[in-house]
Image (tube, rainbow, N blue to C red):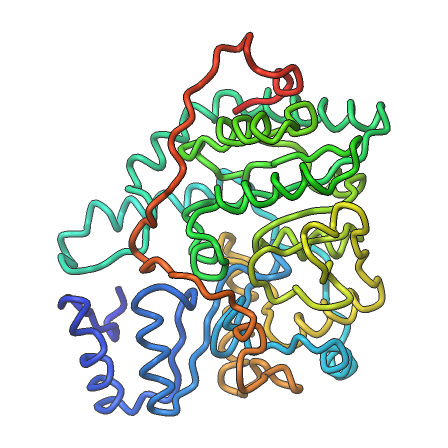
Length: 410
């Protein structure tokens, strides 16, 4: 911790009062935080609004892997970035062409190392902040230990996924992709109308069973960093049998998403940035939660039921304008995981704050336009696990698993 940093070690209930006093004493003009829906940051946003202070959230880039998001106010459902196509086109007209070449590559092990080291350090040094309320969904030890077995079969899982897609292509079987997210992802928990991702899976499978063409398939793809703790495969197989579509439902861990999107009929997700990647690849996307890219002309604006039969393709020209507008107003070139990426991002990040260029060129709407469509539901407190209404599904013997799943790994 730097010499100028101040530590808050009191109970969470004292945080708001402490922050108000700190702002008054030091003449704070701006608040910058990593991620906007974490418990302490939600309070900071409330205090800043009361005191007419600008807040800025930064996170992994919408245009990742070579970008960092720096957005005034909030992100996703709380984003102030316009969702009016004409306003977005007008912003794009004021922006330079973005540098989309990847200049700061990093590996998956490097990302895992930073993630694990940070959270384990926080876990074991927690006695320094005894009242701190972390927003971790799982105990870090359980989360990381449960993911170790998957490391030994990662190569086999990629091969299995590739074979499945090849088989569907050879048989000319149309398929959709459901890109699963980490259950621990605060964006999923704070910007989606589901208490648990299993509810989204259930909703999608029921709709698919009723409205998708008889020959269509759906592939549920696990997040690359998923530790297997939630048992998505078991739950998906159970629901597939329940809805009578076991021969058309597949679950994979691994595989080349870019390759899959090239041939998929459509991609369903809650609010992952995979959606923007899909849109940029020309693949139709249906968003179930709230995402900055869920805009007419980019994603399917109809119901999930209509998506299976008539998925709306993204407008190629508008996709280019959208990316240009994002890069020019709420993205910073660079990343968190490499020295070169950090050296590129930090000066640009700071300059944008100093010059008040974040959400410039008309990219700030006073009232978050996506917040109005947030479906009413009881949101779990950010640091608590919501009650899961689905019972655990026992693992069936291999011989009882439907043939379609024998080529997949759980």
